[in-house]
Length: 188
Image (cartoon, rainbow, N blue to C red):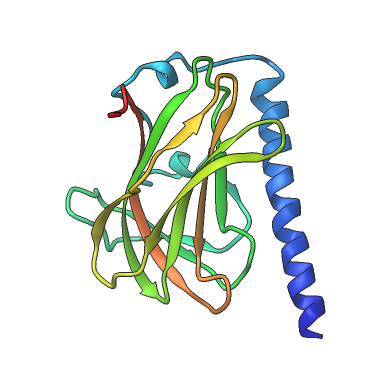
């Protein structure tokens, strides 16, 4: 019975990931539209503080979420509260193709409500993940968290952002002020 549950959860996760990649390829890649801001070094290429309902429109939701008035410093009036207890990510979003590619860093504010969770940034190519960095959210107090490494996204590839709270047990985290920044020249 347990083996069947784990196999089903793994299948659900893989299916969700492939669906997200396929959906975004059809939605934006097929039209060839690109956001030129994604190619300028030293700029924020994605930011979300979940202040309005439209802030959740670019996300594919597969799990439970709600708005919270518990926010970090300078976090506005709302943060995102996500519940875990599943292998599949609670939410994911994929950018439009990046014409020039480059190196990208992930930052956010996070707070563990129960058990913890993570935010992940990945470079997505032709139906596979090239590289990824993960930020763990484990503190019961709000903290600004920055990935220790960066993700290289090749030209004409996309970035995928994933949110999740504890996959094995019921977990919950608060997330706010998510930021993806394009880095300029990297130190040698």
